Amino acid sequence: MAVIHKIGRRKCAVARVYVSEGTGNITVNKKAFDAYFPTATLQYKVMQPLAMTENASNFDVKINVYGGGTTGQAEAVRMAIARAMCEVGEGNRAILKPEGLLTRDPRMVERKKFGQKKARKRFQFSKR
Image 1 (cartoon, rainbow, N blue to C red):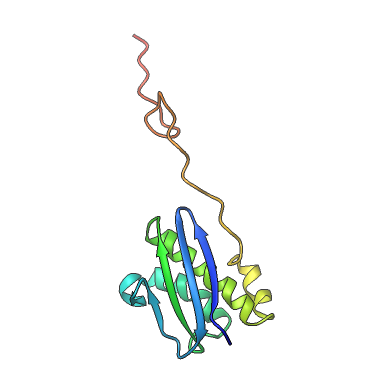
Image 2: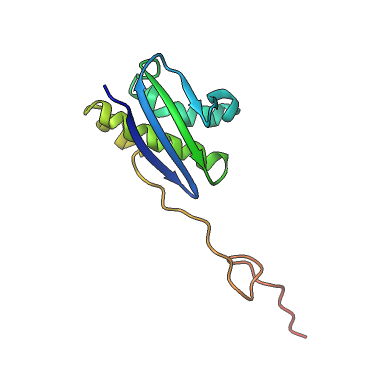
């Protein structure tokens, strides 16, 4: 099997994932997976597609991720790995699609408007 390259996005984060056959080694931006995503919640999000398809120890995953915050990056990585798992086996798509792991989350930060404090918050109104 050749190296599979997939891209995942969430908010402003972009993740490039390279999946190859191996022993389950995961590196994120040349760091250990546990060091880059220290909390259990983020680690669970990243491992979700591998765990659901029972491929956690079958593949080595090399990840380059930039932009956004930690949660956005973790969800971008999750989407990219899910896309790669679909290419690995055709049965994996039926497992991942109902969980929503293949759907791009379109929600973005709303821009700040002029004459206002934030996107929707206004400056305090004074009648007199």
